[in-house]
Image (cartoon, rainbow, N blue to C red; front, side):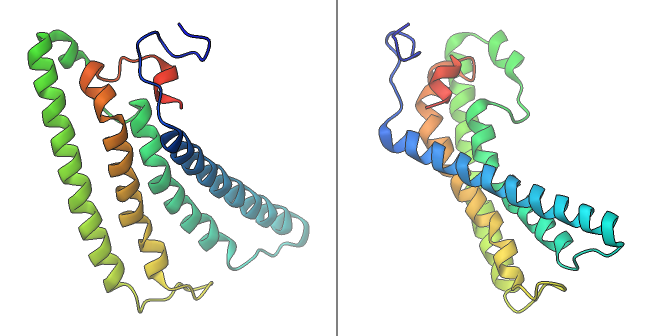
Length: 176
């Protein structure tokens, strides 16, 4: 192992990739903080005054939606989504590699289709307004195409490592 925690011979993620992952994670953490503050504030206000903020539920719900879509790419990098890793391990190396190529291709196609469908859904909702915030629902539904675009970028960034070894890699390789 090198002093940076990267296995000898492993390619260190680029500065741009490290920045991208760090920025993505920071936005997800900020969304979680906003959601926690709004919900905490609303619970406290309800406990102390028996009244709640009429917009708090919407803010929490929409923040959660964005947080899930923005964080899905980070989970993908970790191999944290549902997978059949034991199947890959039972196959001969060349067949396992071909399976990984097929998985990458199918995921990328699925993500691109979901970007297109999310964009279409967002456009259809552009005149709908939320009840409490009077926010255009297209801003809420934009989480889908943005999230799947981020998933596509994360997938393309981890593709070389995934093709080499699947998700059985050193954690230092997935955490730039």
